[in-house]
Length: 225
Length: 340
Image: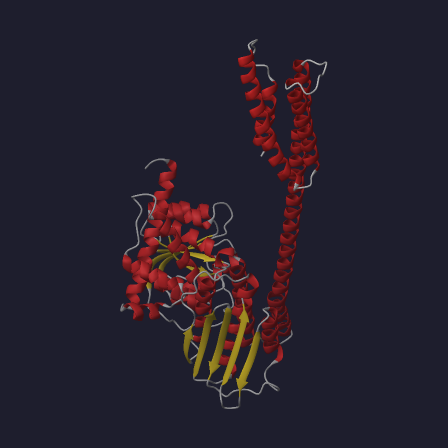
C-alpha cells in the first residue's frame, strides 16, 4: 500500500544496498508511511512489508521472515519488544532494529536483550535511518556510553551466577569499558590497535551474548534448566 | 549496679536470719562473730556505695542513706543488747525480723525508684528520636519539592522555549505562499533538538548517573556529536578516573549544558580551526575550560543574548565562576569552575 506524501527533503541515494525483504511494524500511520517511502526511494528492497500492530506481524513473519525488521516499541496489544523476542526464537538470523521516541537506556537495553542489534530514535533524519539499516546489514551495531555501562553491569552479574552464561572475552571487556567512558569507535580502534570494523563486530557479538544470556535466564526462571 | 544492690540487700539481711540454733555458748559465740563480721562488711560496702550514689545527688541517695542508717541502728542495738550494754525488753528475734523487713522495704523502694528513672529516661530518648526522624522527613520532603520545582523550570525553559519557536515558525510558514524547504528543516531541526533535550533531562534525573564518571562519559559523547562534523579539529581532555565523586542532578545538568553551549558557540561563531575542552578535578573543585583559536569576541557587544546569560546563570546556580579571555583575532578561552 503506497501513500504519496510531500517529501521534506530529497536525499541523494547514498547506498548501494540490496535487501531481499524488509518489514516495518509501526502503529502511527504517518511515521510508518514516511519510513516506507524513504526505504523504497533509497534501498533496493525486493519485498517491503508494513504492519500496524504486532499480531499481524507475528502472523506473517512467523512463516515468512524478513531480512531486516524495524520494530516500534509502543504498539497496541503486544509491544514491539515482546514481538521481537518471539520472532527471534523462530528466526534467530533475522536482524531486528527498534524505533523509540527517546533513547531511554532501560528500554533500549530491554530491546537488546530481546534480540535487537540496533536502536534508533524515530525522530532521526531519514538519511541516518537508512545509514543505520545499512550498518545493521553489514554487521554493525550502535551503542552509547549508557548502554555500554548497562552491558558491563549485566555481564558482571552473570559471572557469578550460572555456568551456562556466556562471558565477555578480554577484548570485548576492554572495548565495552572504553565505550562506557564515551569514546568513539575510531578512538577505541586506535587505542587498542584494531580496525573500526573489528570494534563493530565485537559490539555485535557482545549483543548476541547478551541475548543468549537473557534467554538462558528466562529458561532458568521457568525451571527448565 | 542494680545487681550490686540486690547482693547488698541479701547480704545485709543474711545476718538477721536465724540459721544457727544452739544453746551452747560456743556456737552462740560463733554465731555472734559471723553475724558481726557479715554485718560490718555489709556496712562498709553499703557506705562505699552510698558515697558513690550520694555523689550523684539524686533522690535515690536519700533512700539508700535511710536504709543504711536503719541497718546501722539495728545492728548497733543488736550488738549492744548482746554485749549487755543495754537491756532491752525485746527479743532479738522479733527485733531482727522487724529490722529485716524494714530494710527490705526500703531497698525495694530504692530499686523501684531506679526502675522508674530508667523508664523515664528511655521514654525521653524515644521521644527525642521520633522528633529527629520527623525533622529528617521534613527535610527530605523539602528537598524533593525544591528538585521538582527545578525540573519544572528546566522543562519550561528548554522544552517550552523550543515548542514556542516551532509554533511561531509553523505559523509564519502557513502565511506564506510557498514554503521553503529551509524553513521546514528549521522546524525539524528544532524538534530534533527538543527530543535531545528530553533525553538529556531524563539522563540528568536518573539516579544511577550521578557520578562524575558518568557525566564525563555522557559529556564526551555529546561533545563528539557537536564537533565531529564541524570541520574543526578538536581535543577533549576529561578526567578519566574520577573515583567515587558524586554530583547532584543540578550540578550534572548545569555543567553539561554550560559546556555544550560554550562549544556550540565556538563551533558556530568563532571560525576557529581548533577547539579544545579541558576538565579537571582538583580535590573538590571542578575546573573546566573551552578554548578556541578563532576570531574571538568582545564580551560587551557579543552575541551574548540568551546564550551567555544562560551560562552565567547556570554557573551562578552552581555557586561557581566563569571568566572569558578573549580578544578579536586572539581566540577565546572560557574558564569555569565550581566547588563540589
